[in-house]
Length: 212
Image (cartoon, rainbow, N blue to C red):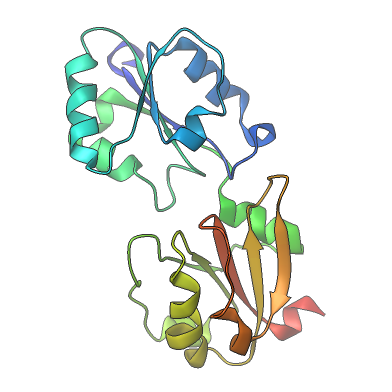
């Protein structure tokens, strides 16, 4: 079965090369084509593989990958862990599970909760990457909420729409996790929507008693 898995979906962790797994490095070394954003491709400055950046229209990139399959092995680089709000779902939908091998990585959610010394077993995770996420009553009863922001207006949505549904949480902004310019800091609900932060940002809403 391994011979049919010509596409490796490689989880590249939260940002720093230090958080790449040996399995991820091995898949990249074996690939004939690397596909990813410029930021992720920069994690692998050397190597002989062909390289292409993911296009805004993902279908064009997937078409190129399909045409390349007869020529060699492909590693498509995805941020964090492929199992958590990732491009992996669309890639597997297009090519099928039998042709894809998924290499797990460290997610930014893992890094965020590790940074504040809390487990994330019962955390509610929302993605605001492509738009305002849907949410419901579960938010009001959740002690731990993580919002993957991915765009500059996401913090405004958290402040305007989500925070009023949560009972007096501690608001923690986790920006550029594992990178040299990492910032993890507490802010107020009133200030959150005015902040200017990187798109590589997670907002945590944590029940106050858990941080005592």
